[in-house]
Length: 204
Ligand code: 5GP
Image: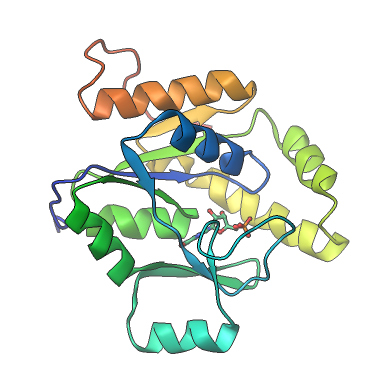
């Protein structure tokens, strides 16, 4: 079933927790003026330095569930016991501006958005190895043994879905990863004509 066609180009970036998606996305947005981030809603509490309306719209669990009941989300998912969702109205508002949109969602959300929007380009950020990922998650210092084991379970599930994404890009060296994602976006927007990267899903 083909999804909605949009004038704006839509990009989704997913990847396991700790892979560095947040940093990659911040840098991509800083480098390019032609992409706007879709700010999600979440029921999780803000981490140090996170701002309401910038990183997420932070709402209570009850508020989130009320929004679900009112069908206000294009997609939503429960990740690590918290809710995360993409607001239908906010995306419609962005689409009206004609700007290209970047979604940062988990694999459940990425696959749902792919069905909803025709031509959505999906990018999966891969960790160099599972060990490296565990090291990075631990270095954040915000995990308890329980939340860490939950994140690892989610990580394995997420990695198993990487093949459904149009592009898989490894974040071993941050600048190399950012450069590669930038080239993918350029190529998709028709800015880069040479076939630097092909859509060849790689088995992991
Ligand atoms: P974190 O708590 O680390 O900010 O995010 C946890 C996970 O939720 C990440 O994989 C992130 O991509 C995902 N996420 C953030 N916003 C959304 C959303 O709107 N929808 C879905 N499905 N996942 C989201």
